[in-house]
Image (cartoon, rainbow, N blue to C red; front, top):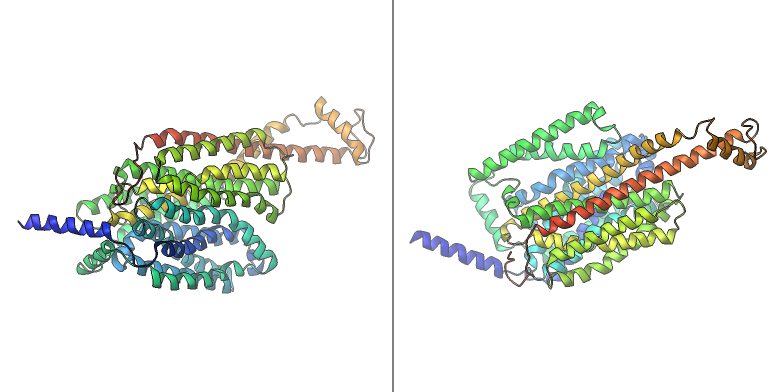
Length: 548
């Protein structure tokens, strides 16, 4: 009889959770949390172009200044997966507001920092605050909207997540050039204050969160310090390796080797520790049981690839036009900005379609567009490509990205109990961020190594005595003060002609390295299409619990 009563109570609680809706307008809540999302994602990339100014202002080297970026990413990676666990003790709304306060205050302190060590410390705090924002915001949207409405809600959220990295470097460059690098941090303060006010007025915790907090208080505050320590060591080390690997020549560096083994040992130990916590009935920091579902494990992989492609191409194109075509930072930003506008226009369309069709086909379409755009770019991109041509290549590529974020997020919540929404949000956001770091590190490494490889091959044919090389020098030396023609490789203009040819070879080898990276991106995106089909058929969402 008692068991039947308990079962009835549990069923009643589930029905109450499913029927719960916030008192405030749901779209006002969506705009509120999207505001903070945009601010946090923007800050992960806005400081990139200001590093030389920061280094010069604070009397630091360029290498030392890169810790301004690394410190943020490391603390961000640690807090992201732990955010669901922390909300268990203090509630989602309170945790979210604490993160907004921490992000806003640390942003102000970053702008006021008198030295590089203080700036790096403040960036660690800023990354910790920012790491808790995205999972909480995504979980708030998942609870606020019905499964049928989630696609439209994630469309609004996706605008911030996808567009902010694209405009971050351009905005950061404009602020730094026209004002001061400190203002890239100060602009966060009023946004954080507005977000805090709106959150306090509009956002509320659903019953399952309130119930979970009450249950945790009954048992007392029992933080899993062992799990949190392993989490910090594992993901913090991974982020450090990805950010500093190319700079330190990867495994040729003892410090990279040390952090690699620390990462491997910590993450393996963390998996066993979390499984043990589940077995003994404790609340794990990482809910690994979610990976039993194909509707979660495969979307996590897809979200990783989305981050890899989004951040990788966002780095690739501006770097290509600046280093090989001579564009300014502002002009490079203008090349990719129309892609962000395209995503903004496409997101509502995808949000409309997600409730009316199988999201798997939308994901397949997105990866198909992304792969074909890479193939087109590989075949058509040259050192003579115009601004307009590259811009339209980016627009076509961005149209594919718009079809990925919303369907992947929607599938990851399929069949998941509301009490696990925070866990889903934390792990999917972690996958996207780690994917972005891997994509950025991949581009940097492949570009450096690929350029060296192609240059080593080409230079074998650019030595004195090679007939083609001598003929080319003979023809060019007339442009540099010598007499064109003939095989006399002495006199005025010869060394300048040789330097000109070497510079041309250097640009060509870099161009080939870019094309190699683009080809790998194309293959990588194509391979995701059959993986999507392994998820199984997804029915269009209906009002009520999501079903698979």
